[in-house]
Image 1 (cartoon, rainbow over the protein chains, first blue to last red):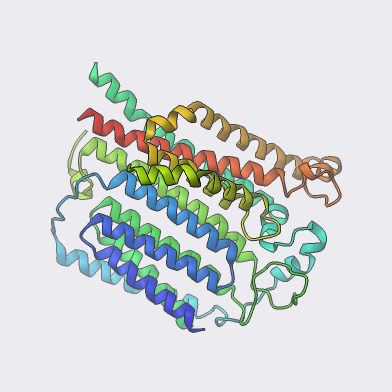
Image 2 (cartoon, each protein chain N blue to C red):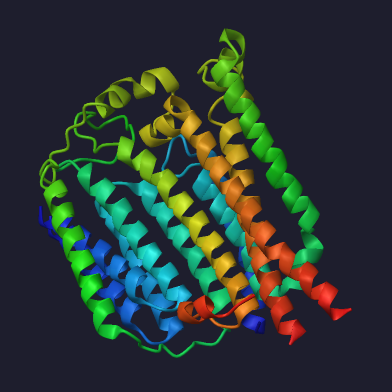
Length: 177
Length: 112
Length: 141
């Protein structure tokens, strides 16, 4: 399964460019490349539903990041206490990688998923719900309360953005008078 | 096993970006990279060798589908990650309106 | 925006909207579903605003109407899911999941329409709020 290795290597390369670029526009475009690489990865891993969703969500976040932030200026990155910051970051990331490796060793090897819960969804899916898409049957039918929670979370973020964005207009109108 | 280690390397690139950079937009980019790596790890753990996508078709076998349950969970996760990114961008614009800069060390020092 | 962008936007706008509705409504047979369809519908509205400017877009879709659609469809989704879960045998057979019941009350039509409305209108109102924010900043200088 060599394609998934190559796609993840491409994503790591684009992520390193996104982190280290001095120009904000270049790093935002590099994050777009990481997202599109992830969508290709989902397609290779036989998940077409997720590939569509990841592509359109990536486009929306790219549009908002470029439209709303690129006109502002880029500050100089002053460097104070550089040695202490680097050493503490390296220690933290090393400890995290070591503990995560101990956790990942417990997973079943790549390609042999143990599907204890999903076998119930696969064998009964078409007969009980009448939907051919098993992922849609799980989301709309077996676990529809999770879908309600997701719609609630989207609604909460819409309310949050409208609340943050409205207070500025009012303050500036009061100041102009 | 190598795939999981590569996915962990992607996660640590994003983690380094969140910890070390001083620009708020770079921190938002780092959070986005972390969320991509987390979703990828879920789908990698549910892959079956020579499997097929979880859609019933009339002429194919039912036996070797990949796991559909992580896919339903990650679908929710992608949408929620998008909402969190939009909220972060709105707060970052608000901070720029008030302080005039994106640098987090200067935001610490200014008052009012 | 230039003339090429405006002309191409006028032509392809209906196709993008139609594609979003198609992916949202046939989510139970093909990959897709309500959330992906809603995001594509929101992208078609965002396309108008990027190509023609914020005044033309806000004259067609007033801010009050968009927010009203978001709140109404969120309430409708809440009513549908709770009626199916706690309503007892009559409402669960009629509204949510029966394969042989009325088509409009199936899980295949009602819930995806509510999802598409919430996600589509919600993302468009977020984009409107963020664009208005940065425009005010440029006008005040």
